[in-house]
Structures are given as C-alpha cells and as structure tokens.
Image 1 (tube, rainbow, N blue to C red):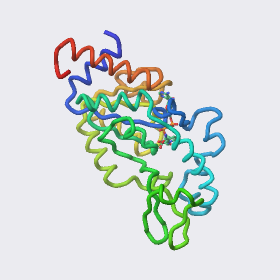
Image 2: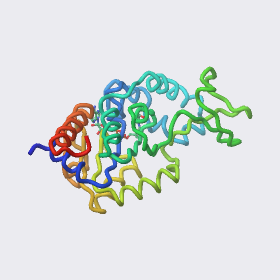
Image 3: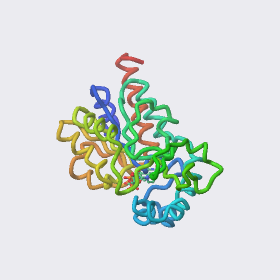
Length: 252
Ligand code: NAD
C-alpha cells in the first residue's frame, strides 16, 4: 500500500480529523509564503513589518506592506488543496481546519469549520478607542483611519500579539482529542500554532504531513510524510478516499 492510500485509510478510520495549515497551502494560489525567493517577504522582512511593536511605532510604514499583501490576497482564488480539504469535510472525513493563514481561502474553497488562529484581514480595529470596521468599508482610504483619527489595524495577529482566546482554546481541545492530523504547508516554526501537532501526537493522533520540504516535524513526530505540492497531494488523498469509499460501498 502506498503512503497516499495509507493516509486515506487513516482518514476513513478516524473519528476526529483536523488539519493545521500554513502559508504553503496558499502558495499555489499565488500568495508567497515566508520562504519563496523573490516574494513579498524578500521585500518586507516579517521581523521588521509583522510585529505589533512595528505597527504601533510606525503604522504608515506597516500599511505599505499590508496594502501590497492585501492586493495579492484580494486577487487570490482557492487552489486544489483548499478545495480538496473542503470536499473531504463535506464527505465527513475532515472535521476542522485550523489555519495560520489570514487569506480566507479555506472558506472560499468550501470548508465550513475553519478556526482562524491568526485572525482575519476582513475587519479592522482601532487600538486607541476600540471601534471596529469592515475592511471593505474602508477600501478607499489609505491608510484606513478610525472616526477618532487613529490609523486602524487589521484584525490579524502580528508577532508579539496574543492568539484570539477562543481559537486558542478550541484548537487545543481539538488537538487533544483528534485521532488524525493533517499538517499542510507549514514550517511549524511559529509559536504557539506549532504546538498543535505535538499536542495531538501526545494524545495519540497520527500525524500526516504534507510539505514540499522536510521540516523539523518530519523526523520527530510525523507518521506519514507526503512530499510534494499541497494541491497535488490533497487531490490524490481525496481521490483515494473516493475510490476506497466506492469500493467498500460506504457513504458515497
Ligand atoms: P512558512 O512560510 O514558515 O512555511 C511555509 C511552508 O510551506 C514551508 O515548510 C514550505 O516548504 C511549505 N510549502 C511551500 N509551498 C508549498 C506547496 N505548494 N505545497 C506544500 N508545501 C509548501 O509558513 P507558516 O509555517 O505558515 O508560518 C508563517 C506565518 O506567516 C504564519 O503565521 C502564516 O500563516 C503567515 N503567512 C500567511 C500567509 C497567508 O495568509 N496566505 C502568507 C504568508 C505568511
């Protein structure tokens, strides 16, 4: 049995399967991860632009990066990996996606149970007076400002900020009880999201990792490593699940 079939079998046997996704799953949608050569992040060093300290001390400068990222994300459409995970959820084989991404592509790809660990760029908040706005309502203003005059911050988690408490507790709870975990397109270096796979492993889950490159998880806690692009591998798993379901005449 090949690794894709093993992964499909595990999914079909698991009562609770979650996916932890990172920037790599959206690379095929044209959104660069932190590693792509020549991408957004070679121009804007995340340690200089993506920290809360940077935003508070110079929001105009950080908005240069946010505006460019907003254009890239705004033009992106879900790829086969997002759509495949949505389809696995629809078929009842994937129960939650926990994403570190802020690009909304899982929802656009059909996933309904999405936990946005690092928030979402579709809303803005004022760090001074606490007012909230929809980003679309401020699209014509750059940088977007609150009624009080302060520059608004998108509701995404910058380095140095706390994870939204509900996302944090729900993800931890799911990690502890999951029987299988997909880890897709993440270097698993950003904390605390990177504790989700190890928490799940300690609880007895099988870890299925999909990545173009090996990560520090690959030789430590990963049970099945599927090397390649997320779109291709998720598609292969989806097809294997459909074949096996049809063969055993279960569900489909
Ligand atoms: P990362 O950039 O540290 O790692 C990306 C991983 O994806 C790497 O291990 C890489 O080998 C892998 N990868 C790249 N292309 C792939 C593909 N086509 N198929 C499979 N794997 C592929 O990203 P991270 O671990 O998510 O951490 C970076 C932080 O920045 C996170 O908070 C992340 O969400 C955020 N970020 C988000 C976006 C977005 O919303 N799309 C984009 C850039 C960064």
